[in-house]
Image (cartoon, rainbow, N blue to C red; front, side, top):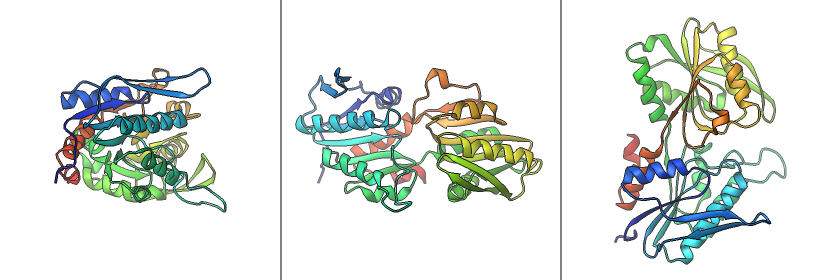
Length: 319
């Protein structure tokens, strides 16, 4: 039995209009007509300017800064489409905010990622399409299907072109113990050995590099992480790799460029030669650095949307 709507419609919130436009372009569709605005008292208003009755609607909205505004926009858009009789609603979230609050780290902590998942479900979403959740088990917080896309294949493909046959000159490094599995899989994709930074975090958003497990001396190093927030972990790792490990140069790649607080200043002063990022989170012009290389995620999300609409599996996209 076929449960999807009569056609595909792509809508966007305020957070990542370029990605939404790119997805619509890849699918050969116009972007859905809608407006998100704010009343003078701060309340968010959403208006749909075309019919969605019986349509398969995809709302593109990264819940990046301003996080709470973007979440509310998404929830209100979902509610508006549900009340307008959309056949099926998918929340397309290239970046899922609150993903790091996925467990009780200490007594009386909330599990905010679960709360956000519940809000999206209760608002009326039928499915979530996202990329590189900070913790993959967040998929289990939802009581609706979650299609979890991977950013690493895009980053790896870009680096494979640069590395070519010189894999023996490069080492993939995990910036902390929590990223070891991600870095190991990434190293396998590009055919390079693996090293690990052993880091002790003193308090939230502050990190201290302790030592390097593996040989990086005389090598070109590629640091791999899922997101860059304040960039403390990444920049401390890069400095340690050069000063303690004896590496010749440092490159880095990550899916989500949150870049809050002192991130830009730290990256600019760091020994990182090139930082390869995906555009799941938009980077304002005043934060853009020459060492940034930005890769588009729209083609991957567009293919996933086509597969969802055709009731085809998404997993073959990543082997």
